[in-house]
Amino acid sequence: MNRFVKLLNFELSRFMKVYLALIVLTVIVQVTGMIVKANQYMSRANEAIYEDMIPPAQFIEQNGQMSFLEVARSLWFMGPIAFCAAALGFYIFLIWYRDWFGKNTFIYRLLMLPTARLNVYLSKAASIVLMVLGLVSVQLIILPLENGVLKWMVPADFRADMTISQIISWDYLAILVPQTFTEFILYYGAGFMAVSILFTAILFERSFKWKGIFAGIGYTAVSVILFVLPELHMVIFNRNYLYPLESLGLQIVMGLIVTAMSIWLGNYLLKKKVTV
Image (cartoon, rainbow, N blue to C red; front, side, top):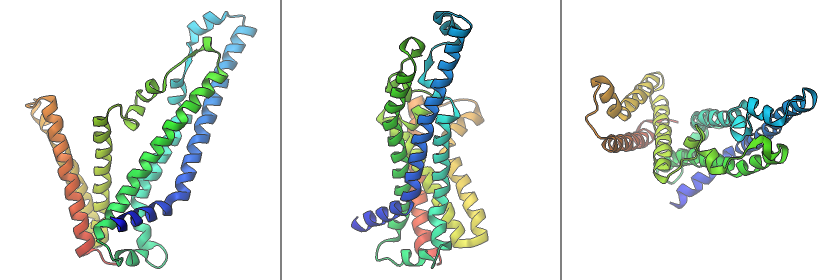
């Protein structure tokens, strides 16, 4: 366990500068977006009220009150989230390939460490999951700040206040911040499964080169089919033979099988097939 923790700390430290840059980018862009959107709304309101002589009540009736969702739907808010997701998605591949193609073929030293090679696999996977959770935590921390900026810039009569719980229950934010522990396990468990599938596909490519590319693609396809098999059965036969809870339970079981299979295969490839 001690060696696993050291490997995990090492993997996190290697990406920390870029990771902190992603956090700073998210905070700056989202807060700036809140200021810009609030200014635009109040500019329209002031122009309508003081230049066009439209009563405030009529302006609100025609344009609606400004809420946090007006910003959450914009590129100012969604852009940094999508960019961070893309960066971590790219890092799923980089976390392995830089060890092969970086200076001095670092993978050689990494695999020669006096620890189980499975720890190398799991430390990389855990670092991805922890970085995702860290970015979500940062988002939760800055939501009250952004909400405060909105209240500071837009008078009470012109805004529709939302609590933090209402904000995070909206649309895609409800996936990033699950509302229940069960949803948290399901969403982030599925995310960990996806990471393990991609890791194993990468190791197929590293083990068998060109043939490994097709093996990795094939393995990914088989894993996805296995995971969606309960839903696929319903689509093919146009009939659901299971109750919703039974269907969910079967989906969870298939997800656990795919995850365990990916980790086992990844460990096997690291121990028996990967060459450095």
